[in-house]
Length: 164
Length: 90
Image 1 (spheres, rainbow over the protein chains, first blue to last red):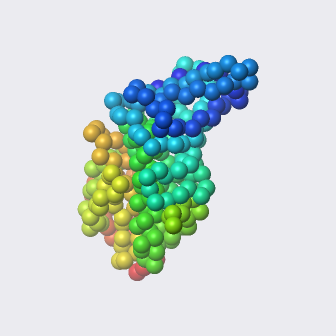
Image 2: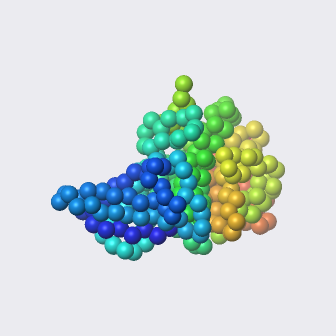
Image 3: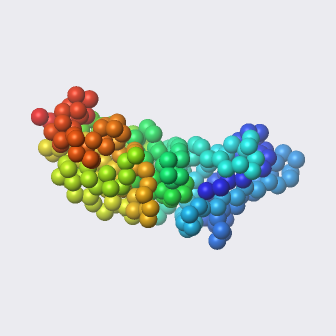
């Protein structure tokens, strides 16, 4: 995914939310007002022909100090799990890294859960799915969890809760 | 690098059957009834790095490669997990 940034109202970092209603056929585009009321934009374009996922609503921070160069928005925070019977009670921090074949690995470090994707969006969507699958599997088998899954479940419970 | 194939080979070696998760395959490692870790496997059309599997099952990348590609047995894996406090059943 190539990201080209312009000046930010906050200096080095600009903050955005990924909203489904501003996804276009070619990617995402965000606009924001600067202190002088001028408007800057930033565009995201999925790589490798991957499609633009719907339903993302994720806050990201972007380093805008290197304008017009590809950068990773890190960290990103999952604010919601739309379409799933869970609510995020504490924003889930996600970091990204570029793997050796160019793919992206998204990680929820505290819970020791990662997932890989051709694009950042794909990795993030996979991570969300993996978080929920892990939560459900460990909740259903709580009395059989070893030390690490037990710790992971405790972490996940601090971040997500089933909707009643 | 660990690949999706390594993830499946590790599952097979430990006698685990991958399950369907939300859009991808998942493997839960259960030893003698105790869950010790789990991981997801991407269905990407080309090879992708799955190095994170190692950390999620209590190994370093080299150990995970050894587990996938034969030198490490399932019994040796259990010994490592016990030594690291990640497996409590005997």
